[in-house]
Length: 486
Image (tube, rainbow, N blue to C red):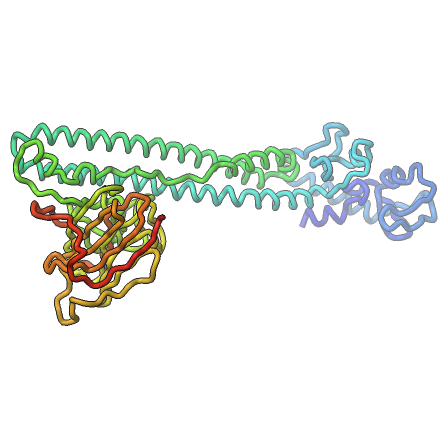
């Protein structure tokens, strides 16, 4: 209310409370000195507001307005002071106007000076409101960026905790396997645990550095936002005096690049646990099973649970794990730890009683996020039907030797001949070739499993009499040719 009343009691020329007001015949009032200063040097005595010609060069005083202004000034002086008003450094007058051309607060004397000739002016409150809104808009992207930084930092914190959990779990599995090998294996156990702890130390330090960097950026962003918000709450003149610096500070912070998740940050469990017994067997020359495909837990969908030896996978909800870049997040899928870019390779997958699964290979560049099926070659079982799926063609319904009343496949043998560009699937129980893809591969291929069932799917150990011969002469369901990645 006080500011509204003060506007009504302000002279249109000096924008200050009337001093010795006079009234013209057009009913507009002005400070006597302001009106005389306005008329000085002008032939026509016109109203500064409506340009109406005045009939006298000495207009009568407006006593009622004078008394009201004096009363208002006395009450204003009695009110507690909110801080000293800013004055013009050149003329000692109150800063009532804002020069749009110079982007700075000025007084009424500055307005009439040569320095501001033909410049545009706004009342200080209007200019402050417009520029506050402009700065508020500039602040919004910075606030959004801060949310992104905090989100990534939260994921990094979760990753750091998961690294510890992985390290503890991996160490437990290593110890359990080494217990079976007795005293002779003690040295090997210590070597591997030492390697694990070194990796944990390195990757934990890496995450600490990442977290520290994010914390530093967050602190800088928070400080900029807090400082800017304080300036937005400041008095208009103070705000406008610091406006340029505030805009520059906000624009500099907006140049910060969005943070990225750290790829390869998790403990490499497959390196420590994959084929562990077989590697030790090479040193001890004792019989041990060897699994040709080890699943990579860092790629497993959050709803997939891998066995301790990383050879079996089943659907299991409720796990809290980091959303690292290597992880599948749409289909419940996992890939093998090692890929192939040459030679022949074969592995057996026990699908068992799973009612919804896919088995095959995935290209190294397969996308892990979203509903992406490109760069996958696989056979799948769903809704009681077998299909062959590839990137180049629509799914092929498989039918033939397996009748509807016969049991489902329990075991699938995958044969990959990278050099001959052939991928085939066989039923080891009957030696029937289920399907063959003929492709021109150009990148590394990884074993791929998708399991939407709580029943496990397992990669079996390699048998001594297992061979990698192509089953071209065997009974089969269908064969197609896909010219891919040529």
